[in-house]
Image 1 (tube, rainbow, N blue to C red):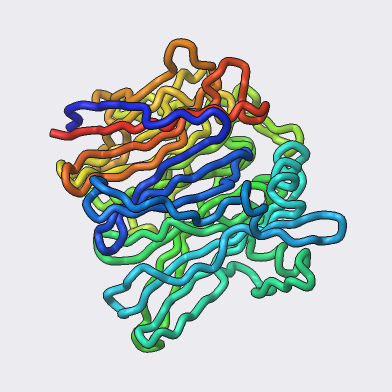
Image 2: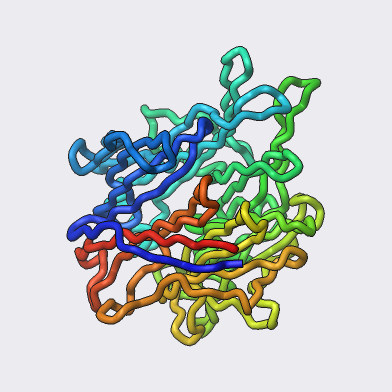
Length: 437
């Protein structure tokens, strides 16, 4: 159980959003990244430093990229526009002890008119400007690397720089992928997030009935299962059924899904939707629809998932939550499983807001509900802070020495009536430590 929660403000930045994240690499070194943003929903810079003694001493930060200094990355002219490609097909890095190979999942996104124009025209005008594609790669012991596009339909597999807006490529297999995860029994799984159009195609459902409003702008999800085929000396990938919300349940499909394998064997997925109508996206959702976290589960090892439902506590109360980021954490000290996110007053929820308080709560290991008596507040809106304050952009790390949970969070939109969209880039980088008995 949780014994105490402490908090401190690490740094304050007047004119740029800064987010710190930490991970351990394969050698046990602590890697910290400092990410900056001066454009909404877009990382403008990244720097990396290393500690070989668990954070006591560090190398200097080294630049990975800096758009503000070096120019916007991934751009190229297309007629009168400047388009942009973000992401890359990365080398596989995750060792598979069964095959002796390394495996990896990568994604790219092509943005018509670039993020600074095309992304906002999607949000504000409903334009179909973002095209995601994903890839599975593996490196054989002899160094040979095999890379394949993740495909659910026929279509071109290779991007042609001489014809960048070729819809035979952009318009098919629109899938983002990630979250490569090794299960307790050694199986590798990952998420793919196809457009709702493609999800409905796979499910055999008429998208014009299920999600007619904006099916290419939002996604569903599927779980991919990676298995080494010794006879073929290659990998087989199979997928679960699509997990979907229709546009009467969520105006933005589903997002930021979290996979949890419970001790009882159930596979639980928790994710966010949105209750906010978007006229520019032809939203059908009732404007009085409540906002909550959604969940689904599988009792056959992630092959099939039940239809999504509102998540709930052991008290049968719904987990009312805005459309915000959340994560799960299992303590290696206690073995207990926790969810970290925003649970808010249901009458105040509209889309992504409010984004406070930030809370932590234990998850039941048989059915996957939240245990209400364990709900603890990590932080909330403080005196003088605005109602659009965000306590939802955070990263988790378990300290290998102390077994404490470290949470790094960046507070934005702290001033009443002012947001990043209005040019207010003031932020505070906070660090929290959750200790366990």
